[in-house]
Structure formats: C-alpha cells, structure tokens
Amino acid sequence: MDQNTVIKVDNVTKMYKLYDNPKDRLKEALIPTKKKRYKEHYALNGVSFDVKKGETVGIIGTNGSGKSTILKIITGVLNPTSGKVEIEGRISALLELGAGFNSEYTGIENVYLNGTMSGFSKEEIDERLDDILSFADIGDFVYQPVKTYSSGMLVRLAFAVSINIDPEILIVDEALSVGDVFFQAKCFKKFEDFKKQGKTILFVSHDLSSVQKYCDRVVLLNKGNKLAEGSARDMINLYKKVLVNKLADTTLENGDNPALAGKASGNSITDLIQENGRKKADDTLDGSGIARIDNVKCWRDHFDINPDLIEYGNKEAELIDFGIADADGMLTSSIEKGTDFTVMSKVKFNQEIQDPIFTLTFKDIHGTAITGTNTMYEKVGVSVAKPGEVYVAKFTQNMNLQGGEYLISMSCTGYANGEFTAYHRLYDVLNLTVVSDKDTVGYYDMNSRVTVEKVN
View 1 (cartoon, rainbow, N blue to C red):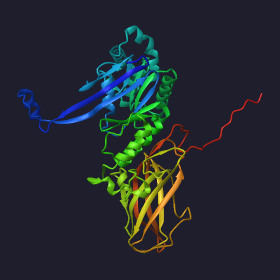
View 2 (cartoon, one colour):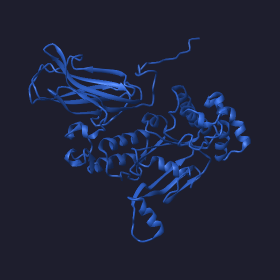
View 3 (cartoon, rainbow, N blue to C red):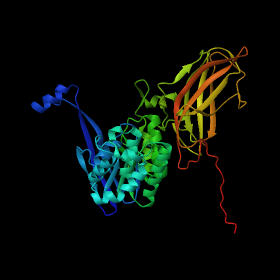
C-alpha cells in the first residue's frame, strides 16, 4: 500500500450460507459431508478500490448492493470470506448510532466506554468531553441511564461521541440526518469542517445531493459487485440508469473509467427488467440499450410505483402510462437541480369527453402540495376526445426545487354538464429525487443574482 493510500480494499468477497431449514445447519455441523445443504449468497463479490489520504469517497447503490457490508468489513465488524482490507490511520465509524451503548450506563459512562473502544485514553476523552456534551446538547440527561433516553437523544449523543474524537478516517453510513433540523445542520457543518481539515471520509448515502456536494470520487455497487468508479456526477448518472432499467447485469466496470463504464452500461441493459415477473429488455428497448421516452413501449415499467397510491375516478378516461424524463429524454426518477425535465401522462378515452384537463402536482414527503399545474391553467387542451383515442400530456419545466424527495400526482379531470368530474386520479404515484449541490431556504431556489461590493 503506497503512502497516500489510507484504505485499500483488495478483492473482498463476503458470502453467506442460506439454509432452507434450521435442521440443515445442525446436520452440516454434526455430520460433515460433501453435500451442500445451503445456498450461497454473495453480499460482496470481488470488490476492490482505494481511498487516498484527504479524499471524500462516496459509495452508492440500490438496497442490497453491499454498501453497508463493505463498511462493516472495513471497520472490523465483519470478516470477509476472502480478500483483504488494509487501513492506515485511526477510524471513527458512524454505522448504527448507539449500537455500542450499554443501556444501563449513564450517558457520561457511555461516552468513556465508546471512547475507550475507539482507542482513546481516559485523559484524551477528558479533553474532549466538553465538546462532546456541547455538541449532543441533551442537558442533564447525560447523567441518566441511556435506557431512559428518547431515540432522538440517543442518536445525538452517539453522533457527538463519534464526530468529536478527532479521527483520521471518518466512515459514515446514512447517519448525517439525525435529530431535528437544527441538529442536522450542526452535523453537516461538522462534516464540512472535517473536509476542510483534510480528513479522509468514506461516505454511504441514498441522498444523492449530499453525495454530489461532498464526494471527490464515488464507487457504484450493484448486487455485491463494483460496477464502476469515477466523479460524483458520472456515477450518479450511471446510478440513474441502474435504477430505471433495473439492471440484472452486474459487471459494467471497464478499467474503472467512468466514460467507458457509462458506455458499457448502454450495452448491458439488454438483460432483464422487472415488471410483474421478468420481461426481456429487448422487448422494450432499441439497440441503444438506454430507456428513453421514444424507445420503450411502457414508461411506467421503468419506475418504482408507490404501492400505497390512492386511485379513483369513473374511468371514462384512464391513465394508462406515465413517467419522468431528464433533459436528454432518459427515463429517470432523479433530476439534477437547474436542468429541464418532463413529466408525461398517457390517457386513453373510453367515452367522448369535452375539454378534458390533464393535471400534475408535486408534494413533499409530508403530503404538502408544493406546486402544480394543468392544461386548463396553461391554456393547452383538447376540445373533444373521442372513444378509443389516446393523448399524451407532457409537462416540461426547469427543476428549481431544493434537493430532496418529492411525490408526484397526476390525473385527467374535466367538467361534465357543468359538474367537476374526476375521470382518473393517481395520488402520489411516483417519487422524484432532486439532486443538488446548492440549496437555499424553503422549497424553491429563487436563483438570485448576488453581488457584494465594498463602497468605502
């Protein structure tokens, strides 16, 4: 391992034995035979990458891709089945906050317990105690047993301990957004301070905005395999292709070159995609292998649809397809802030309808309507839709929402005999992730042009 490398992951594999019956595990232990009584599940399969001193490296991937597993192996919580990991420097890991706490001990006692487990002496913990307690800000509860804490107080103290012991390497697994909004702001400020100090950070998150903002380099995993690594922007774009095409292929990596990795992804998406079972990708994609507005039969097949959506209407007009596309026409549920995107809905008319209205609404994850529009407001419409006709409504706009998660609702409505009528409505049918490296206050970015000048 060279002098600038502080984490070296070399061909790491983690295999779990899955038994159909608990008795098979016992039989294997008591009566060794060549017969396998288990199925092999590879949480990681030959993963390799390096982290240089002072780098912030992100790891992204879908659920079950092996992100948390690789972090646990790096921190020593798990042992690899094969391969090795080399570490140069003292690590502080934010994995499962509070997992190492003793519920019978007070907060203060747990501070010393965790500090000792991290390799600090009592004197070193004494020096940091005021900073830890100030950061946690849970008052006199630090003198009470941890079992009396709320979940919020527990994670605040755990985060404060981990972040204030001045590690050389910080490992974070989905742990920055804990507590209330003010504590979250404090956590991100501390994270930024670590970067400015030149600390090495390994960062796992589903928050693509944070990944793009903080990470110098990103490793993309899928089903235990490393697909590629490169710049945050390149890997997020490739990750969006993984999401919308539900790749069965697991070997996109081509010499760790992001450009080649992107090209490889275009050739490998012709495997399988999910939709009520397995369907051949070449039934829905053209030769490019990329899911785009104009080369798939059904947009909705390439999205995760909310299983708890609310649907109603008389179905005289019916929403038969829908989707989201970025500025390049690629189907995706992740849109970069400041870029154009389109939300499409396809409606089949089962009855003749005068002046149908196509609608679109955005909500936050708490259910608050943020914005929306419809073809009546926009003065774009269809005077008469006849039975059997199909229309596509495309709402194209620039993404000015702040980074985060949103829900999309859509419908076809109108006025029949002067009465408002909902022909078909789908509430919260799709999620939309806004990826941003610069957020302002509130829901929208005003895109202010700001100048600061000295006048005397």
